[in-house]
Amino acid sequence: MNLRSLLFVPGDRPERMEKALGLGARALILDLEDAVAPPRKAEARRMVADFLATAERRCALFVRINPLDSGLSDDDLAAVMSGRPDGIVLPKAEGAASLAALDDALARGEVLHGLPLGGIAILPIASETPAAVFRLGSYGGVTPRLAGITWGAEDLPAAIGASTSREEDGSFTAPYQMCRALTLFGAGAAGVAPIETVYPAFRDLSGLAAFAARARRDGFTGMMAIHPSQVPVIEQAFAPTEAEITHAEAIVAAFAADPGAGALSLDGRMIDRPHLKQAERLLALR
Ligand code: COA
Ligand code: MG
Image (cartoon, rainbow, N blue to C red; front, side, top):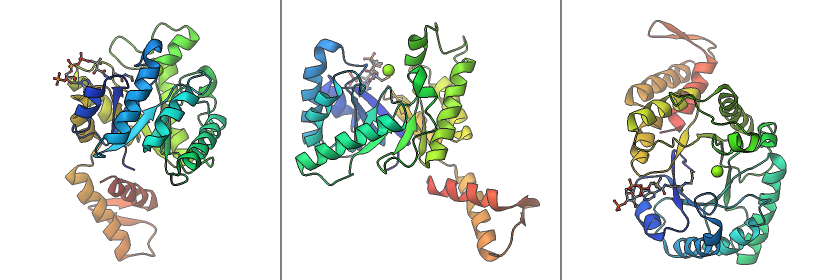
């Protein structure tokens, strides 16, 4: 599943869901959590279920349920499972145990609704509570449903009493830079895609472009969006360029021509196995 761009849509805005299908995002995240006020949760569940049942599947459809300890997530899943979402986004995820718990719940729902076992993916938001930060390395080997790992910089400051996660220029303060880095390495350790968090200033597209470019440089392979105008910027930022593809193909060709070689020379530079690995990863992102 290609998760280069994922667009959040509030679960109680059906007209926005319909519109969002045609915006070029690889996935939509139909939100039942923070974008929906408590009195509207039940109505949002029905709206998301209706949309899943009828929407033309032009991109992957994820549902963000409420946290597992909220008392709401069972009803969220009960409402949306029959609509066969492509994946569930799990907010306030706290490592392997929460992943295993959702894996079980999804398996029960799949059996109940006669869906293919294991067909529904999971994308945890894995840095939203203090405890979660210490479990970012624990997501591997739990379930093949794990499609990636993403993080959030909005809920954790509230949870620990910090006033913000950002410097005045929009960059992250040190504690949140650490969460971002642990997400990258946690996803790498689990062998899944690291997905960059949202850029809340949705009118600032040049700021978004710079933010997404740094994310890609650091190894993230996709990013979440909150507004339609962010989708093309994200798509472009995470797409390998023609020059990168040509260079990667040259590296792969050089090793293919000389399979026994450890190190080789290409255009006057040494290339060795890590370069081959990097080139293969880049080509896989096309
Ligand atoms: N999905 C689909 N369509 C969206 C959209 C979204 N997330 N956000 C905006 N649009 C549409 C609007 O319906 C509007 O369409 P129209 O021109 O046909 O009327 C158009 O894009 C322009 O919207 P705009 O006026 O610029 O935005 P807004 O001020 O109405 O809304 C937000 C701003 C942030 C409230 C809105 O973008 C949004 O709801 N984002 C998602 C929030 C969310 O889910 N948060 C939870 C995760 S952090
Ligand atoms: Mg949140």
